[in-house]
Image 1 (tube, helix red, strand yellow):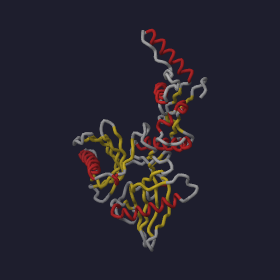
Image 2 (cartoon, one colour):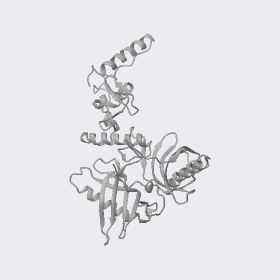
Image 3 (cartoon, one colour):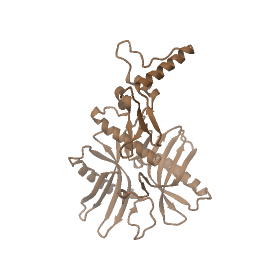
Image 4 (tube, one colour):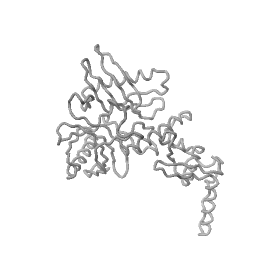
Length: 361
């Protein structure tokens, strides 16, 4: 980065700001030193002094000093209008390594930068509810996905209690004409704050209309001491937002059914709320699809099925075709948890037939 110019950037809110150049930082530091001396206090050095063994300051110390001058990681839109990470001078002092998992090589940096960018874009666009790409546990990933099927019964019960409590409060509001009953938590993300905070996507039954199944998004929290205190920050019907497109995403056909009117000919795709009854068969389909995906030479990254998130299906004369959304582990990068979509079915002789297997767009 040249000292003579400051890099102009634009954040997601459209606010233009400038990253200070090295010369500007030095000028800011000298001004701070002059003020400290005027006040009779000892000014801090621009960078930590070298250690006695001459090895210099640790990367952590350098990061601490640089982080005072500008944001630790800044988001700017790329050519497609999506957020990207720009680390600036942190690149030269281990800033990227600071948020990457242990053991990740320098060759894997571009992959993780893309994953962190995708993660932050998803968090921004969905208010924390949709996490399809989770790079790793780090300072840059405060919200992380929960694999509901892998939780023990006690934890699942606690999260379901939160969902029921939020729906109850929603029903008590006089302005809400329709009343609902929570059926199932489709997926959930988790954030540790002063509380255990959850971002839940919940399938609910419209009690007023009788048969309508809808999707709600609930942000709620409970105390860390396992008490009965519950906090509900928001509880509302899910609104689909796709950048540049309003309430329409052709790539979601079959995989995301947020509203299901009833068992009728017009309702082609049916949400399979009780897919756990056929979990073994569905897992077999998913594993077969991922194995086929891994065997394609052009697919550099290899994956392993971790859990099934949700399932929809259509019924034909000969079989049921399943639209399965799964969480997978990235074996190549080791730490990321990502989302795949699989369209598959069982053939007439019990064989696995895969129509589509892809990362969720």
